[in-house]
Image (cartoon, rainbow, N blue to C red; front, side, top):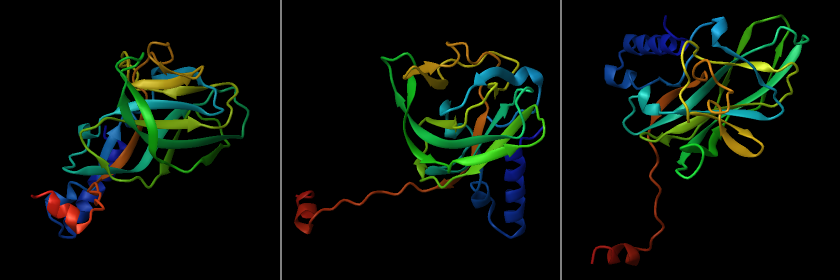
Length: 232
C-alpha cells in the first residue's frame, strides 16, 4: 500500500510530465523524509506516553534515504500521528508544533546523536477533536531554509496542551525499535526512548515532505587588496 507521500509524489510527477517538463527535473520536485504513516493497527500504539504540557519527541532521520537531491533539501510539511485514550472528555483541543533540528554527535553522552537548535519550526496550531477516534494525524506546513544533504537531522513534534488521560505514541509496530534514534527530555536530560521503555512496539512515526534546493554559498566581505593577496 502506497503512503500518502508516495501518492502525492506520483501526482506531482505525472502533472509535470503532462506539461512537458523533462523527467530529470520532475523527479526532484518532491521526496519523503522520515517514517511515513504505516496504516492503522492496534499493535502500533504505545499507550500512555503523551502527557503534553510542552513534551517533545525527536526522531533521527537521514534525508538521503528518501531524497535524491544533489545539493540540498528544504522541508515543506511535517506530519505526526498519535492515539487518543477512549476516556478523554470531548471535545478536546490538542496544541501541536513541529520542527527540524540538525543532529549533533555526542560520543561521550548516553545517546550517539542529540538535537541541536531548531533550524526551522512550524507555527503552533490548535486541533479540536469533536468525535471519538482511536488515532489522529496532524500535518503542518513550514518554510524551511535549504539544508545540505549527507547529514543527519532530527524531526520533532511538541504537544503543548495537557492530555488527561495521556495519549499514545504512534509507531510502525511489529518489531523492536531502533535504539539511539528516538529521544525525549526527562528531568532536563536527553533520554533514549527505547532504553527508557517509552518505545517498545516499533519506530516512532513522524515524517515530512521535502523539495530539492540549492544551499546558498555565503559571500565573503573582503577588500580588493585582500583578494589579490590570496593569489600572490
